[in-house]
Length: 131
Length: 213
Image (tube, rainbow over all chains, first blue to last red; front, top):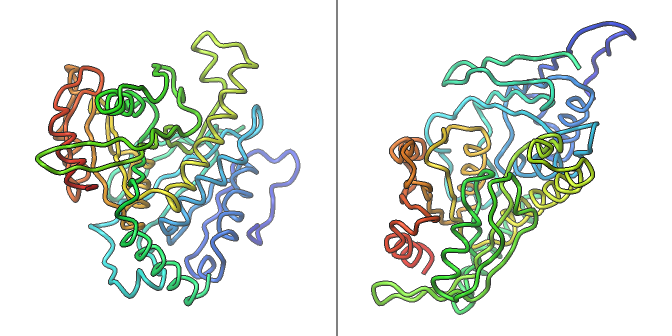
């Protein structure tokens, strides 16, 4: 969990965690996924300054599926600004497992609370409802 | 994962593909729910083996576990390719059992269906990273292809260096817009078809033989 305060009991609102690329850089893939899913399962919205790699996105979907349960957690909504063109990555980068994550601001929230209203190249507009 | 481990895994993946030419290629049929993946898998399997892969339905997540049809031999233009077709559940980031209640389902059945669906999607994502040699990505050409799941899935497939063919399905419907799909993913070839009606299947088989042969 990010080192942020949780809303006091009875406080009404939706918390948004804006997580810097620097903070995510030091985490393993599973730590990133845990950080995201723990926040989202608490009803928070997570905004990642630097998005996830394709491998991490794949694992995020897989882990999300294993945690869905009736009347408790129905999954996530996720939106990312489209990257401009294809990842510019050489063979060496691929062999070493380096994947493109730059310039992918990503918004993730609970599926039962967040609804994407509009998305284009430079705007993600979302409606967030309280539980 | 360490650099050496990554390097070793990458080299293993490449050599596995190089030396596995005699084995049938495992071709995963991926896409969002209700795009017509099972209808297409059944069409291909029936055309070349006489058997179907699984039941089709308009209810989302009819395919909850991946189904495999092995040794489907496709011949086109003097080229023969043998593939194992893996029909996967529609990929999504959310599954709510309440959506199934709208299809005249009891809560118990809806919960069971959603649980099976989540297991199936998790399995399909795992296989995409570990167990397929190529991907047929099926989209419903009557709906907007610019969804986050489609963008993510195509990105994941590209990051795995897997050959991918995009099939714009349901062209028999008036609202079909193949250009919208081709424009959404211009870096890949888009083949229009109707898996239900069997429209344009000659080109489908030509492209399968060309891409996965």
